[in-house]
Image (cartoon, rainbow, N blue to C red; front, side, top):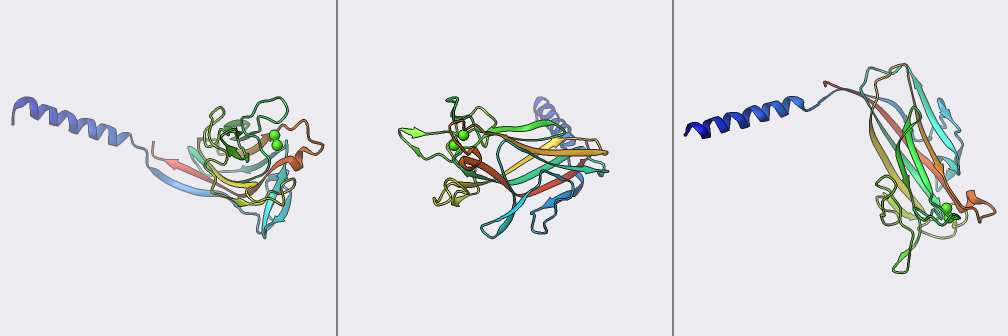
Length: 220
Ligand SMILES: [Ca+2]
Ligand SMILES: [Ca+2]
């Protein structure tokens, strides 16, 4: 083997070892909150209202509101992994910005900082008419209505209660750097716009089916 080739091999090996040692691995992972509302548990929950929809107990329905979970005395961690399953009901208009119907924003975050800022749309989508949404990206991106949904074949809740495909279910997940063990406050909220509706909440709203929060400690 030539001298140059040998040193190139050595260089590649060192580079590999250097990169490998930079990879974080999970040392400890604790589920600090898990709620699908089946036990009617609203401890630590702000603005919790439960109702039964399609044989499932869920929290909602919300329009221009914030909900939050606050937990104290957390295990040592450097990340939180938050995961929520939400239901987007009725005629959300996504990115549509006409000063009347939208945009229809939805936010999620920790300790008053939003880590998700997006829009959803339940609009029909045809060649001449389609109201795009930002999810699964943050605002502003032009994705198709219901992009990233895990279930769409459900009726609306209020205005479109008699029509299929007017509720969409999404799982929204984020890994967030966080180290404070004293407390954390996880929030979700919306800024829905529908100025031409006598009952905006019936026109568009959202609910929560499930929330899970993990405290993760890595070796970094
Ligand atoms: Ca609407
Ligand atoms: Ca709207």
